[in-house]
Length: 247
Ligand code: SF4
Figure: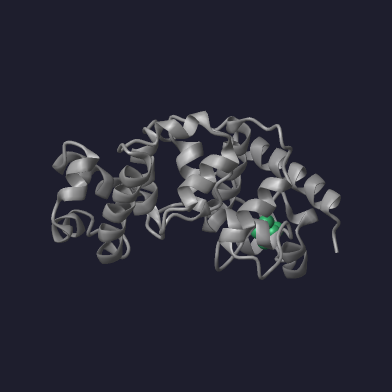
């Protein structure tokens, strides 16, 4: 079994190789205030980016501000976000979470989180029922707060699991703390964002859920899953992992 130091070294090698492949620094894809990023992140759970983006735009177009969304009929919100997974759960949950933010902070804003350190800001968010580690990290990292937090989505998690950074039974939630601890404590927000983005891109473009393209993967020599599969490169074509996948 790899020691904690071995895993930290491996995490850095993986980061450097994937950064070389996908081109770090990766540009931020959002410039939303943290409360809007919270709504966006809640919509995105188990949903394709295009669909959650459409739902977010529909909410923005319908309501002048997030207070208006709280007061809106839940069935109306559900209809506006019908394209996301589980709209019937997400509509009341988003309203309840926004209500909780207003109730606990006294205002419908999360800008104050920028005055806290990352553990305190994450703890504040995760104390709200329905907000987990992925959402709290996304709010801090992806929003205009640009704080050094590491989100882990299902693609990121799959690559981390197959390469042995986390064990086979570590779920997405608990993986956040383990994967963050493997990276240098003084890494910037951009470096942590890059780490998440390159592992996520690798999961999308190379380390596929059903048929990982191990034969063309730059992590093969250090990946126990890939080495065990020993898939012949000819069976997978020669397209680089960096190339976006056809949709
Ligand atoms: S070698 Fe295969 S299983 Fe391992 S990270 Fe690469 S694509 Fe995924």
